[in-house]
Amino acid sequence: MSQPDSEPSRLPDSGDEPVPPRREPVFNLPPVVLALIVLCVGIHVLRVYWLTPDQDFAVLLRAAFIPIRYSGQFDLDFWAFSSPFTYTLLHGSFLHVGVNMIWLAAFGSPLANRLGTLRFAAFFFITGLAAAFFFWAIHPLGQAPLVGASGSISGMMGAAARFAFRIDRSSGKAAFAGAPLPFGAVLRSRAAVTFLAVWMVINLVTGVVGFVPGNEGQIAWEAHIGGFLAGFLGLRFFDRREPRQA
Image (cartoon, rainbow, N blue to C red; front, side, top):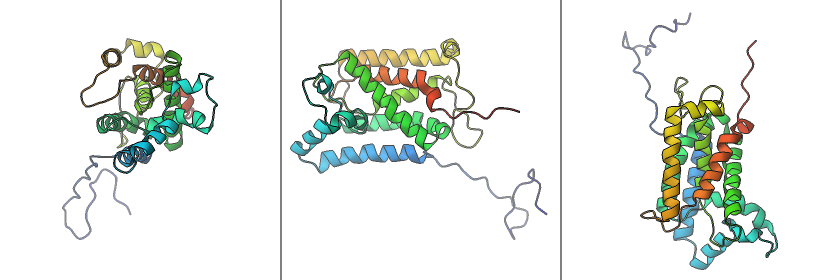
């Protein structure tokens, strides 16, 4: 007969000494989040230490998002359709990729636990696409390449706002719990509004000033806002449907 759940587990042949509680790992990233981090960091390391400047330029020309490509002055080739997705995997510096991966781990992990691997991957690339479109709408003739996962991560922040940034750890792993809050409820949450206000000010200031220590490129605040809006408004298209109560 099995022991009742209320009694502590015991080691075989260890007398009355209870089994010490299992400690949760410090890094408990979902596989899809870990895969994206490894991919982004690996691509940047490869570009910096393996490719020549000419080869790296060729990569940027094909995989980065360049708004003027869609101005009608150029033929739309394969790269024109793939770069609105692949640009999210490229970064401008080690600081750029490092900061983005920290935010990806923080906001992507609970969201990936809720959505699942395929839905989260779709969320990552679709919000990245929305970020690129928003950037293009403001700079349709821009020639500077847009790179980085910031737009997709901003989409995750938009999704997190739908839960007022609350994380439920009762199941043993971080996951946003319950149904997403209505838009009005988010705006009534002091914590959510405060975070979003600070985030918006930081994006606008860094975008206008155009300088962040250690980062050579300009901050694309337009892409951040586009990704955020896509995640905030479109979360339900990716969210799993909760089972109905009988």
